[in-house]
Length: 212
Image (cartoon, rainbow, N blue to C red; front, side, top):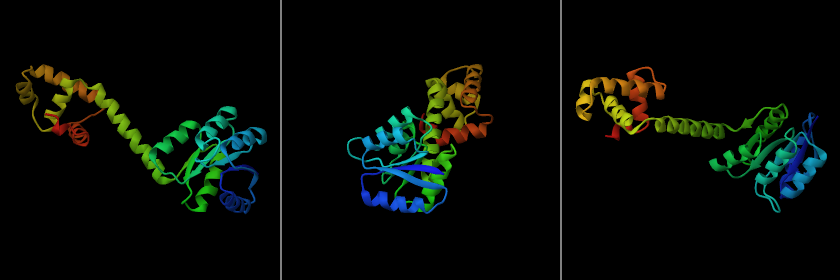
């Protein structure tokens, strides 16, 4: 049996969630909390398997409550159920220790799936949240790679991506061909690229065609 604590400042929301959850024989709502402070107290006292947490609540917001519950007992899994779908909330919720992020506008089946998933130690995010996280990770990864390039290497990358040969780049930058070849080799290693095609594709995607 999955023991669940509901934390939401709206009584009607808690009642609806309780009716929905208790329809399933493998889960049960064991208690409710009307604010973040009460949620932390009851979670520590009752040790539910899962807490369903609203973000905006009196006395203590759901983000802080999530963090404090996680610090007190990280065996308690937390599902944040909110109306706020901004990317920043997703990151902050996961950093606070939640295992799932769902919107109140989602289908009720998503919540039931999330409860079962987090109770087994898995994470559960709705598809768009996953996409946002992946996109952000890719952007950060690309930014970190670009920052590894020196200013000269970025110049060379831009010319090579535009189709200039090593000799033509050397003439443009008043450098020897060996120096350009060395820069090119370093660029490929730093960006983890194997072919000129990959280099061109990377340069286009990251705005290097307009660099020089």
